[in-house]
Length: 443
Image: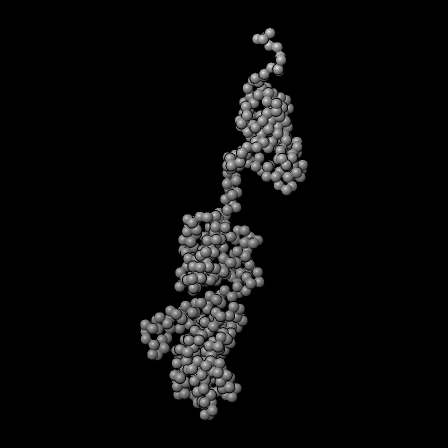
């Protein structure tokens, strides 16, 4: 509202200029005009709108029709009807000599500025309104004729403010189609539109933010969109808010924390990595073609692959045990494991049955981090007895054929050939005679 109260101070000057070449039809028309000016001067904008309607109805072809239309634009904006403010400017914006139509540079600036600031209040302006607003914003960017009575320094400051408003309008108009596509869940169209907007306005924080949102929308079906989403939101978090056209508090309190949460969810806690992402995003609006961020899942896969490469036998058992422990573990055993030759495994001997020349070995497989006590999980049924007594708690290797499985207690039974057992130390049995037996010593 205060902006329009400041505008009202110029309106009497407009009328004075116009009176030199225009004429009121009669005293009644002048009185209506005078009433409008008084309404504006006192900030009674609703009454001004009603008086403008009376003037237009009574004198549709007034010499002051353009002046009246200019006032309509200002008043519609003042009563929070931005759509009507933009539409009302249409006839004036089509004029070849806009200064002559509205009464000089001061009113040209007011008209263009009002349209540019009104359109950003419309989430989905109509096509005609978008065209009019784009015309006004571009003209405002290019218009540099200082109004009479305005100091040079003040005009230079005003020009910066006007350019900011014009760019804001153009950015808003560039974002509207993509925003509408995103509202309809057309993620691909939204991503394409926001990318185009960011390319045109690389410092726009809104364009970067919405591009990140569109990429996250695509991420639901395209996991590869997570990285560009993080980059776009990082861009929105680091651009100077004065250049980016947003409230610094919103950037600090919404964008920055959101980026940190997303980055940690996707990549894991990594302050240095987040800092590198921000530094890169600050230098360019879009990521380089080869840019990537490792996900938590990818890191886990890489670590698992490396573990399997370094510990193939343990990795194989972990895979087998996970499948057996699953809800469908018994079905997996019957369909995929039973009677199937299993590559060499590694474990620790926990018990030999019997202890001398055993035909059964109970084996535990140590967890990778040794966080759990050893428990027998595999029973080896040997094709023949061992030649002596195997020492317990020693690690060895074997190949076997799964023949039975119980889920509770967990136990996989395998047939194994003694010839395919490696690394198991066996010492001669030390047998104690049965009670009452006769020996050479006591005979």
